[in-house]
Amino acid sequence: MAKKLKVGVIGLGSMGSTHLDIYSQIGEVEVVAIADPKKSRLDGSNRAEGNIRGQAQGSVTRLEAKKYLDGMDLIDDPDIELVDICVGTNLHFVFVEAALAKGKHVLVEKPLARTYDEAKRIVALALNSSTNIMSAMCLRYWPAWVWLKKLIKNKEYGECLSLTCKRQTSHPPGTFYSSDDECGGAILDLHIHDTDFINYCFGMPRAVFSQGYKGPSGGIDHVATHYIYDQSQNAPLVTAEGTWTMQEGYGFNMSYTANFEKATACYLLDDEETLTLFRSGYEPELINLDEGMGYEFEIRSFVDDILSNKKININLLKQAAESVAIIEAEMVSIKSCSVVVLGVES
Ligand SMILES: NC(=O)c1ccc[n+]([C@@H]2O[C@H](COP(=O)([O-])OP(=O)(O)OC[C@H]3O[C@@H](n4cnc5c(N)ncnc54)[C@H](O)[C@@H]3O)[C@@H](O)[C@H]2O)c1
Image (cartoon, rainbow, N blue to C red):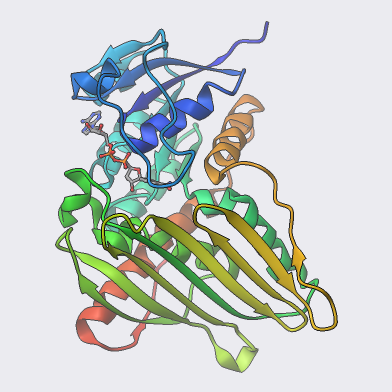
């Protein structure tokens, strides 16, 4: 039997248990260690919840794995080849730095880091590392978004004239989401999914104009942004709105409307998931999507790269760092109520 990739998961909250669920379905992987300072998370008596159906399904109770109260001890464990970092965003940098220094492969939850400065330092460390690192920007792997990226690129229905993205929910529970210092508010934690997807499809915008307000995290918890591309080159009109200020019980939804020269695509995930393509002269077409959430395709792809000794594309990591820079520009725009021009050094 082929040797399995040995994984250690740090942080057993909603994302840690989502990742555990996915690893349990990948035959080539073995979770050999888990870490969390909360004993109740290590023994499974306190299970985290997700905000989307299908999240946080992993369980530690049937897992034969070493248990650490400190994630740094897991990183020191010589058995572990891949360190999966699912702690709060404020801790991403220190754990990534330590894991790369120990020669581990690293999967780190999004956003890449709490600040652009830390994100840039991660990219610099990755450039000098012989192991692979991936920022878990899951929309890049989510079937409905993969489908959209392909249409934007191959222009099957002409140029993309406009893209509007939206994600809305009520405030997630837990101390991490109640601290702007730790999570960065919905603007960094939630809305970055759309910002990063826009960056991934169209590149860095020339400028942003954002409006928003503070909410329960103490940071910007509702934001709406225009991503300004150079209109003289037929650039698309791109906007995104993200919030976790909805009242309790509201649930979660994410959506996009992409208008092409010859088609309009409308996607909505709430209790159901639908993607409809509208074309003049045709009946609306329901698009069949691959089953599954972005998390599983993302993790499978990273594991496959490691097992086949494929080096990661560093540009994808740089782009995840740039997305943090865009978010910081959006924060400046909200504060100054002005258009903020982006100038990210390479
Ligand atoms: N990709 C996505 O769609 C998605 C969704 C939700 C959250 N996230 C990201 O995942 C990360 C974690 O979010 P979450 O919702 O799982 O948070 P969470 O608060 O539910 O879980 C974090 C866990 O980390 C543990 N922890 C804290 N300090 C630790 C340490 N020193 N060593 C080991 N464990 C430690 C906590 O006890 C907690 O169990 C955040 O960066 C968040 O932005 C991504």
